[in-house]
Image 1 (cartoon, rainbow over the protein chains, first blue to last red):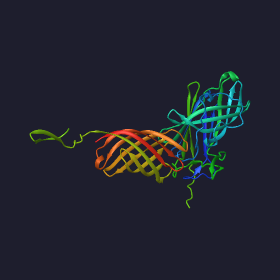
Image 2: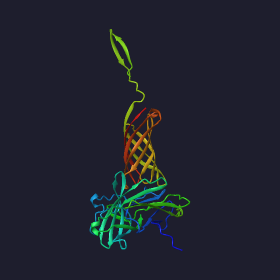
Image 3: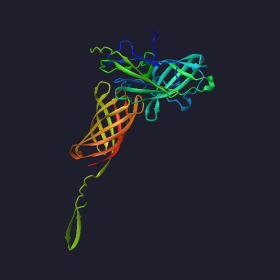
Length: 244
Length: 146
């Protein structure tokens, strides 16, 4: 019997270890896009109802990047162009460089997701991608938070315009994306009694209650050929926080 | 409409104007500056604030605000004055996730008690909320009729 075909877009969401309803946790997002699809031009993540960033202490400042930096290919840089206290998530991404129909080579990079300046009338997002394979370069992408359908918490949208083809003369297609929102890799700074103090901000607040079927997350991906795919993932309810 | 009384003094008619009677449906312009501190929280999205309003209608303020979908701010604001309470409904959007988040939107004046029992109108507001303390300041302007 033939193995079932993999879904064109796969989504897996999980909470950090020790996650409790009513407490803060990290939120791990993993997304995979089939290499048979056209390059991704936009992806959206809708968080489960009750899970928003409202009460999180992530993104205390905005990373303001000039519009000319968006998708501009910069040479490798050794520091993030964004303030530390704007960082909301860290992770990694892989993308396929399609040389021809038969050959694709994959590149990889580290990803930082920052709170950004407003985009129109919406809170903005900025993604910084530092690639390390096959070449080192830095890319900047823009996105925003938006109001999702009522059954969801908040919508995160990222635009993925194509990298100038003159660089590789081949289209580049997002393959996998992993992000840890509010994870241990995030360090903020504050001034206490005149001294700079580093600390880890609280993660994403979870509501006190959870639907019986679990928390439903959704990814929506749009492609260069006009196609669109949507996929859901259900995350099992964490236990309740022990109240002391 | 002015009410007047004609009084004859030394043969010369004098019109004594009495106080003008406010015309029903008169429009009143309103500008408010409101400073709020949180007094109660329900979960991570519902807040009750108390504070003061200064401006056209000045007095103590109580509000109940809900933050939905991380960016939607909705609720009611009640200003208590010596002449009655004025109730406003607000519907706005956050513009950033910064520590001091700016937001703006529309306000609807929905009446109240005493002087403001029949007040109806609309306006706009803008403000800043501190996501650490949830203290907020709001500036609103608009007009109402009564």
